[in-house]
Length: 475
Ligand SMILES: [Zn+2]
Image (cartoon, rainbow, N blue to C red):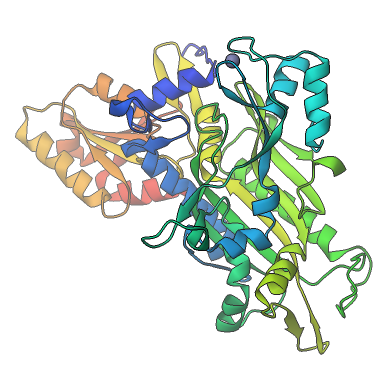
């Protein structure tokens, strides 16, 4: 019997960041030029894990369902989009400057960190007065702070050769709005009937005042978002000719349904139940568009943090775009012969935050190894193949054949170094669930050893049964 391992979870986010760099998952961007806060590049292992996360999301949201389709829209956006959505006016954080050293801070973060005060939803005057009254000064130099003012988080650029107010464009701060713009085109071309959803995975940009916590708050990131269009519920305050539904509001029903659906996705991919929770938003926390909102939070090394938001956005977005563009974005219900603006339940997840949560949950320090206990579906490499020794031509050839056969179906890795112990450790670190070794017995018996990452136990499997064996394990 094996002695039980002492398992240490991750101690700090810095520990994970340096591991990610060393093992080829994530690198700080522009490092040779001194770096830039809030930007990260994904390395050879990281890009595979990230792609697998996105593929699993797409499968569960789009491919496994009959009522959701996908799009892929542009990231440089017409300014009207973000005027209509309310982002030009309200996508802001309260900013204060140090009059002495010119450092900039988020006023709400200062209030939280220094005074332990929650000022979410408060106006600028209230925040300024609170910081003045309690004599909060610059954390860096103790200098005096300016009054709080609005700071817009959108990156601005210009389209075409002339920089003027007429050709301003924004890098999108979320993917959702592009789904609303395409609502009519998608519905008509895909002949969809309510309720149905439109999904998108793509980049978004936010010029954060203070990026922090590794991949958690960054300035360029990816989102996985789906907008689910429904008939307005019975309790809707809208005066449209919407068909009334019996009993409880449709909004509430689908909001709860999607909350459950999304929580199950993280659980099904191996995140421990005790590390996940819901947090319902209070009334004063709700965004300008939201009627109800809940976060899925993960228990990160620094505390609970949002990895996904589920929002009841009512008919805010489609109505706004109809109003500002002058184009009709309503829906005609054939059965009820009624025209109305659909309501929206949104599920909005951060790819990078999901990546961080999966990594934090999987990373373990054991007695003599670091091991990434990732769900096999997410693991960058599914199996590694080694010849036991590198100086026996028959063994090397047989291992090469095994590799060539498996790579038709899986992401596999071949390592002919001949140092099995070291090879195992390297694969444990990047989360490879199976290590396959071709040894002297393999030549006679036509089988290999398959070592399990988590139990470190080995079993012999016939070479001709190997593909089927792995398929079963990865299902
Ligand atoms: Zn200062």
